[in-house]
Figure (cartoon, rainbow, N blue to C red):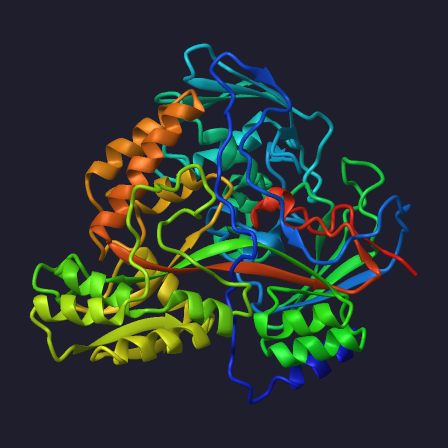
Length: 547
């Protein structure tokens, strides 16, 4: 196995890292009823996002076959996949076979039991009581109980963190019952608990014994797999959990994921059968492989945007006419069609045009270079200007080079600086450290519930991209939308929020990128993109390989 891994990786020597973040073919951002206070349920509706889009029909009514090692290639290596509060990006899917949450969301958008068997929302909406599945053990042999859940959730709530910002405390009712206390009814809490990998439960004993740094790459959860081997920047191997509580799963003898950053090498190893599928496939190879008979599956992943320093009053970008001129100068449709093989989708509002939150009353800024030059002149820059732009090698280079070219046509010189992904995550996204009058890629997760995106990124309380000014009125709109107990009210509030962000333009939306999955004909029931959400995946749970 290792010989295969290293021979594959050796192909990559000398190749510049290219990670094409991907957009969507059928991007959706929509909502549906959340359980109302007083609801007792083990399967409640959460949203109405469309399923992932597939271009090749999957085999139906086949009996799963046991055995085999599922191998796949992906563009980004695993980094931190064992400590839930720090799981993000591609580590979400690396971590999922190891770690589980209290509840999950099924293919129809309904909440289903996972580590909890039932839950009840109090009549006043200020607490949710979960009954835990009994007899479940972490893979270190210790018991899953209410104390373990409290330990994990205490890492996510104030004052330690703001992940579950609406949660005030966690109560252990008894060994198998835990109560989540809220400051007010919040229709996002169950959604977040069902999809956010930060809400996964790990062994407190293992964490306390070994520490956080160890836990980052040593997942001790309740899932169907345990860690067999981890080679940083190269590969990660999974082996079945012999004590998995859901008897009969998994079907596989193991999984091996290998980091292969070059799309052409990915295509080669898939065609030669060295891997069964590619995760995070590039648009440049996806259509070729589809035409060659491989299955292509896509779903929304992230909204890519051009964000700028608007915090400093003397920044070039503090003038909104400059920002508007830039958007008019960029032909998003052509970029997505020609460079993105129609797998990328141009975006104007922060929600998709088929979302109920999309505001049709807003006049969008489509490509108009004449208008762009006019606004630039009115802003005091008739001859344009030069600015620094920060991105990572993981961002869609071809797309941003095209943006650079369109801006150059109206006199704006965009000096692209590629930086390490860890530096970007920590400094630019996390700490909001950006040079005055500079710009950077901002990446917002596209989820089935866009209110989650708004709550995470688009309020003045957001911990991310703090170099761009968000209108303070967003705080009230988002808070009211979270407290809404009916879809009509929530939709009206979110349409107002959509309009406010577009008209104030703290950033320029560019395109939606898809997560792309390309599989061979032997691979079945992979468990990715459930209900059209990249975070709603169960990779490897029910996957199997035909002969």
